[in-house]
Image (cartoon, rainbow, N blue to C red; front, side):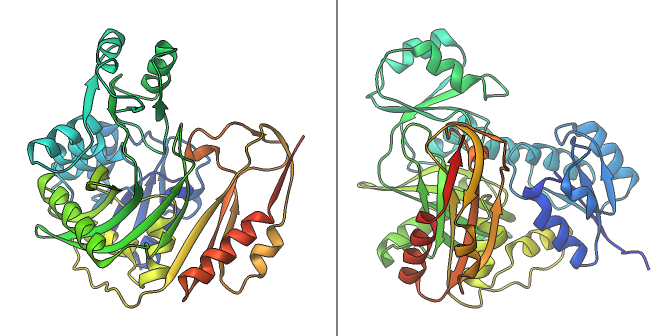
Length: 397
């Protein structure tokens, strides 16, 4: 018997695989879309369409012909514009096209939040090199420079002086599809991400994740843990600003992933997406730590089905990314068996194989791999994760 509902998932890479597998488990027909003919998700989908997730008209044509019940992407920003475009034309449960722009273009996002008096860093949107040279001299250094429409730390940099401004500009602008970049205040503090689901205009905070990054100059994420180590007052402050942000951007229904910096003057919004968070936060850490299957909840939202998921418990889940400061050809990765022997072990993934070239860590895609642990006690899991990470050795030729 064929499933009576189908869902189109934009993207068929490893990133989207949990959504594809979950939708299949829920009895849905899955149509996966990806420009890569070798995308791993095609093996698990019922139908695979070799199309760029940014080709709105082609995807609309197929979605209409296949009479899909819903359309979504898991943790990618740019396909959200296609999701909104197609979904609104087929009367599916999606965000508006305006909300899609507000949550994928950091310039529009900043302008909207500023208008609604949400705490954000000082910023300036830059459209060309001449404007960049003029505006950066007005900022207190160091400052952050980043593209308006990129993700995964691509094109993000800390600028501490006025030397090599041409290199700084072109590094960030090369990662921007529309050519625009942002100069913004360098915020200092602790960084968190907040996963939410909204229903009829009311946000429900599911989890607050504490983030670990490489710091300057590129701030690549190297670890996440739930629950975050914050006081009740800090938790309330973070929840309030996230809820205000979701409402200001009019994300009335569905998931959102918000990044927050807790500064000396209180929390400020780094950015927000009207989709699930990446880095295995929503696919692994949230359900492991809370029992709330936020991927399933997002699929139910997309096909206009009531969400029955609940936060069932409060445990600890941690992900640690594996990396090395050296550059060169990877000869061997050792110490991985120690991780798999842990009684808290959940998953281990190495993204690079013997012979691959390892470059300087500039974005999420440069990381060698990761492992995930899960258990009851936060402090013991942190200690064990650090110990296991210290035993991993990447030998460079």
